[in-house]
Image 1 (cartoon, rainbow over the protein chains, first blue to last red):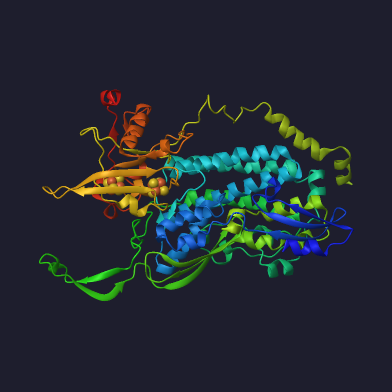
Image 2 (cartoon, chains in turn brown, green):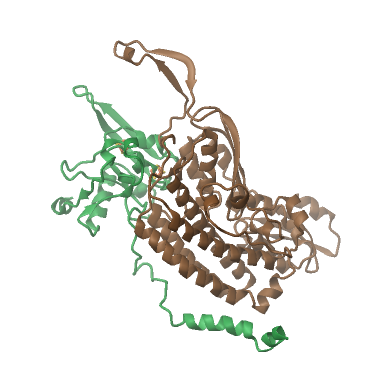
Length: 401
Length: 190
Ligand code: SF4
Ligand code: SF4
C-alpha cells in the first residue's frame, strides 16, 4: 500500500517511513507519512509485525488453555483480557460466578485499568517530553504489579481468572494493603495533575491536537476513553454491567473538545474513579466461594465425551456406546464485550460442543484505533503524530494478535 | 486576569518544581538489583521443581499425565511403564522444556499429589539450551536448591490447596493444606 503512495508523489512531498522500530510508536507500528514540509498530508498505517496467530492457535487449545493466550493480547492489562474471555464462555454456558468472585474480578480489573493508564500516562508524557511523570508513574505501577504477584504469583501474564470464577482466593491482609495503597494512589494522581494539567508546555503540545468530533468518533468505531474524550457517553461498565459493576458506584468522566488534552483529562479522572471502585469492592466483598459449581475442570478433554450406557457392564467387559455425544460446552455462538482499559474488548466465540473453541475472534480496541490515525493526523505537524499515537493508547500485541 | 498572573509568574511550572524538589528528600524506591534483591512473594511462579518427599527421598509423581494434558504450551513430556505385579504406573521419563513454558501454573494446580511446584526461584537464565531443559534429576535438584535457601521450616504453595475453592471439587490430597517439611540433613547430602 505504501509503495503505491510513493509512486504518486511530486517534488514538494516527501514520504517518511516511521517505524516499525521507533520507540514512540508503542510497539511495532509502521506509518507511511506523506509530508509537505513538516505538515502531514496523508498517513497510512501498516500493521502485522507482531502477528502470532492467536485466534487460530486458540482453535487447537482447550477452553482453559486458550485463556493463557489472551494474556498476550494486550500484555499490559492482561487481567481484563482474561476476564473478557472467561465472561464470554460463562455467558455461553449460562453459568454465573459466585458473588465474591465477581467482586474480586471487578477489583483486579480496576487495578489493571490503573496500571494500564499509568503506563499510558508515563509513555505519553515521555513522548511529549515530560520525563518526571514517567518515573513517578512507574513507581506506582510497580506497586500494583506487586499486588498481582501477591494475588496470583505473576506480574504481567497473570492467568488469574478462570471460567466460572477465579483460581485463588485473596488473603485479607493483601486486601487491606490494596485498600491503603488506593488512598496513596489518589494523592499521586493529584501529583501527576500538578505536573501536567496546568503546565504551559503540556497544554501547547496537546490542546487542539488530534480533534475528532463525536459523530466521526462513533463512525470510526473508537471506544473507551478515546471516545469519551469527545463527549460520547458510552461505557460498557455502566450500560451493560457485568461482574459486580452494577453494585458499585462510579461516574463516567466525559470530555468536550475531543482533543488530546481532553482525552488526557478523561483518563486521569478515570484513574480516580478506578481507585474509588477498588475501595468499594474491598468494602463490599462478601465471604464465600470463588468458583461456580458448574464451571468446567482445568483438565477439560478436547473431544466431546460419549455417553456410556449401563455403567455396571464395564466389569464384565461389555461397554455400550450411544451415538449421542455429551456436550462439554454448549453448542452455539456468543459475542460478549467488556470495558478494557483501551476500549471495548469483545470476544466472539463459536462452540461446536467440544472442548475447544471452533472459532475465536477478538474485537481489539487498539486495532480499530489505529484505523483512526489517518483521520486524526491530517494537517498536523510531524511532531504531533507522536502525541496522537500516544493519546489513542495503542498496544500492538492486541492489534496484530 | 487571574490566569494571566499565573502565567506571568510561572506558577504552573513552580508548582511542578516544588513536587520534584520534595522528592529529593523521599526515600528512594529503586534497588541495586544484582547486589540487592526484592523479596519474592509467596507463590511466585518461577522455576519448576519436583518435590523431594521427606519420607521416601524421591519424587511423588504417580505418572497420571494430567499436567501434560493441561499444559497450554505442551512442554511437558511424560512416559511411563506399568508394573506388572502391582498394576501401578512407574514413571520412566519426565521432562519439562522450561524455555517453552509460559509459567501459567496450570500443571501444579492440577497435579493430584502435589508433586510438581513452581518455586520462587527466578534467576536461571543461561547461555545454552540444555540447562533449562529439565529432566527428573534436574527437577529434583531444583527443589533441593530452592529449599536450601527457603527461610521457613516448612513450605506450602498456595496452588497446592487452592484456597477458596469448594473442597469437593479437588483431589483428596489437595483438600487439606499439607506443607512439606524442610529436612536439613537430607538437603546437605545431595
Ligand atoms: S507452568 Fe504452564 S506452560 Fe509451564 S509447564 Fe506448567 S502448565 Fe506448562
Ligand atoms: S500431574 Fe503430578 S502426578 Fe500427574 S504426571 Fe504430572 S507431576 Fe506426575
